[in-house]
Image 1 (tube, helix red, strand yellow):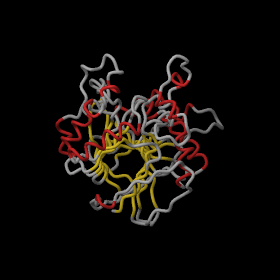
Image 2: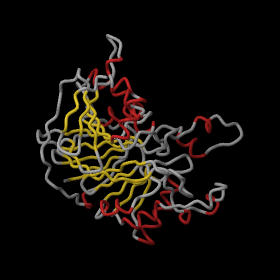
Image 3: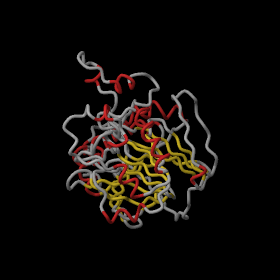
Length: 362
């Protein structure tokens, strides 16, 4: 099995690199930094605005995907002759904010050489479609690292597509992944882990696997702190904190020991699957913000908990952006309801959308 080169990196990382890839990274300490909330602003685009240059000291977040595993719109909705799904019908229109691919964000972070590193969190089964849309629009070329939250298809299904980058743009891509999820990859993506099975002349993604624990680690001088959460019964997923931003894309419960890691969070990016309730694997929004007419169409779920907004009230970030929404979440309708919480509670929370950009001055 050609993962023979196993070396201990600065704790808590282990590196699993195929023998054929001789490249390695050196790590430097990264000074702590704060994100002034007043400097944060969002811009929307339909993908036709061209590349935008960042300042040398500016980090930018780009939401490459904000939807569920199946995405929005659903084919079954668009082909249903008996019922029109309003959200999926809207999502089928170009540029509509209800159009959502698998949850993923890209962090464009300045490095010591004066350029920017592109750090991706998750590469799900729709990742290549997201990249086709947003990479040319925003002038993104390289992928300098991929961090994995968990090993479901909507988080790792696009690893094979990274071959376009390692064949044509760069020699390899480092992957940061928990040991339990790496073990899944040895089955689902065995040919990326054990390259000895590849036929001569065939090319696959050249990946370097770095095993992370639940302790902080550095990627291109940027510190990431894992945020352990539950994504269904006995299934561990990781969120990540970088600076004062906390990203938790797949969660059904937050363990008590994780809350201290969320202290003084300025931007919370949080899972919210449905408008009416949570499920066994995902947070949902709170029913009280949705109109009665809207809620009563979702039969059989009134007894389930709903806790995304409850968690926001507990964590108390300065701003919250929800992600991972299914086709029951109409972008404009839900955001109109959420906006009322700013008036009543001072709670700044909105749905994110594919292509949302948040520049941050460090």
